[in-house]
Image (cartoon, rainbow, N blue to C red; front, side):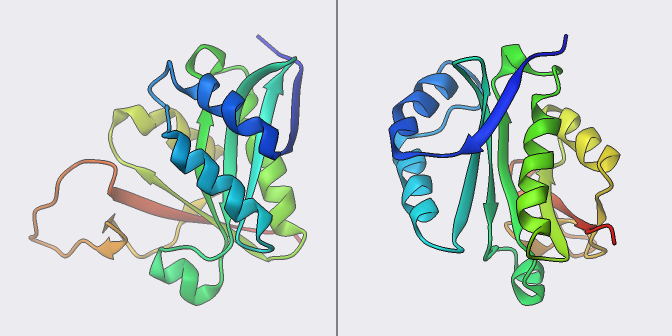
Length: 172
């Protein structure tokens, strides 16, 4: 199903609508986190949050963090797309792709590369496929746990901190 989707930058008046839109789903976020995102959007070059709307209904959001906490991205000055969330009833309608396209356009207007990380268990499956289809490739650093390399022979929890990071370069 193809929906009419609009994407725009987050505004202060969106805070409650985002919280209400995410709250009933497995992508819920604390109100304090959403407020923090807004404060960081007010700071030049800290965070950019884009919101997707299906008509007047909140459909999802995504962020670009310009100074990643992942050491490799930070060292290389690669902005990181984070927390791309689409409201579950609206998934598989192209909203994630529209958000990714808008986030990438913002990054590629000023940077040559963008990064993204994802978890490795099945609930990340849709995101994993989306990023690969969009041309993201592994950064070559291997698995990370809490942004640190997983060394051979070690044991780690399979949770949201076990991640693989990917990079996409601007098409010239």
